[in-house]
Image (cartoon, rainbow, N blue to C red; front, side):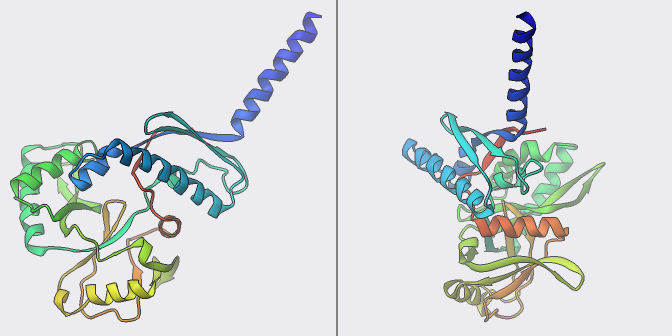
Length: 284
C-alpha cells in the first residue's frame, strides 16, 4: 500500500515538473517611470489602466503574428504581470526579445545643442570616473538637461555604441534631438532584414503618408543636418541629409549582426509596446 502511494506521489511530482518545463515563465512590470520621464507628466490612474490593457493586447498580437501555441498573462498587481509562454518549435529558447519596446522614431539632430551637451558630458565623466551608465542614465540625463539648459522640446538620447573611453570604461555619446519625430514605425509599410554591400542592414518602404513625411524631413530645410534613427531610446544610426528621399525607401545600417537585424525588423513590424517593460524574473 505504501509503495503504491509513494509511486503515485512520484508520478505527480514528475507531471508537475514536466508541465512547468513546457512553459517559459516571466514576471514583468510596466515602466511607467520611463513614460513619465519622456512626457514630463506623471500618468493618471486611468492612463495606467489603459496602458495595462494596451500592453496585454500588443503582447498577444505579437504572439498571434508568430502563430505561437499559447500565451497566458496574469495580473499580479497594478502594472505587474506573470507571462507564461508555451514551448514549441518556434520557442525553444526564452524569447526575451519579445518584451522589448520595439519603438522606432526618426528625429532631427540639433548640432549646436549636441556639441554643448557632449562637452558637458565629458566634464561630468571626468568628475564621476567609473560611474555605471546603465544604473545612472536617468540621473545623467537630468544633470545634462539642467546644466546645458536643454529646452523641453528636445530630448537627450544616447548612441547605441559605447565609443567614449574614460579610463577603463567606455560610454555612449549623447545626442540632442527634436522631441517630435519626423517618422515612426507606424509610417512603414514593409521592413525586413537584408544584406547590402556584404553588411546586414534593414530595408524599409513607407506608406504613402510616410513617404510625404520622409520627403519633407530630408528636404532643403534640413539639408546638411543628421537624421537620427532611434530604436528603443538608442540612436542606432545617424545618416547625413544630403538630398530628399522621394520614393519612401531607405536602409538602416546599425552595425548589426544578421540576427540583430532580423530581431529589430521583426519588432518594428509587430509594433511598439505602449509602455516600456522591465523583466523582473525570466527563465534560466
